[in-house]
Length: 416
Image (cartoon, rainbow, N blue to C red):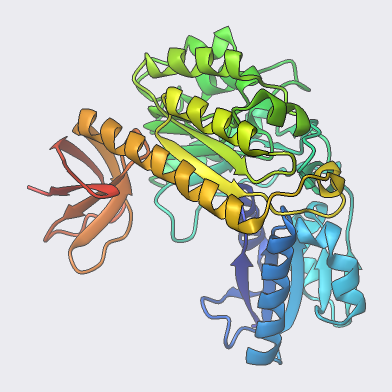
């Protein structure tokens, strides 16, 4: 039986897609080593030119390291760079998003293939196990209807479309039966869930919370305009993780306009302060160095960040993405300047996170991952890392920490 190794780049949605492909392998065995696998499926990311370069570098490297393996390109990169990689014979095959459920058949092809499919497909696969994970990622929707100037994703993932609610419920019921208690809802634009099914994120959450075994639900990145009154009514529910990731991307209204965003700072600060008042840790995405970010825009932006009740951040230095509106914009920010702004922004949020953890170090509910040498790591309800020392095997266990010690970028505790 031939073996297949999966290499996953990018976001949680890609991680879920890899699990879908793994679950569909019937005539192959799963390999944990890229060095001796017969086939290597690269689930690629194409969010930036840099992401494309990382995928290409990996493919070039694996062709040298394991030249006998057939390399198959999947993921977002298959729609943006798949044709060129296939024509250059860098990969044996290319398969688009709509084809991943057919992977068992596709991998049996003996000649090079290009199966790109379409961007209207929505998965129906029920994943019953997550290989090597304590938490389960649940993809609830696909695609995005936004048109942010820097983003290529709508053109490689398609328009927003939701998974069927019953399929999502079945998915969670099976995973809960198999011992999973924490579920992370993910997708291309998670907060758009239900708009094509006369439903909503809040309605879905209410139904998911009633599934036996569900202990904690986390939600992927939400847009500010997607947090409505119906959603706010759920903020105090015990199964809601006390962490929300709200994608702001910037705090300067000039920059938000250039990015073609749908949020503005006046509304954002009002929303985040309301969420924080319910005891929530709050994360965001923020792009520094986007074209047009002059010194005054940056100073305004960083001062506004300081005013927000943020605790976590995904900070990105702008990376040009061919095929987007931002790629043709002038007023380019030099790399060294963007790097310094990234450092300044990260330090501001790190300080805020430290202060938050000092104020929220009691009564932590932690789901631990696999440990090593008696040290286990996991995340609490605020999505802060907790490191625990124990002589017992606590892999995959829920642990209640009455009082943690704040130490550097994490909290620490001893299991008693």
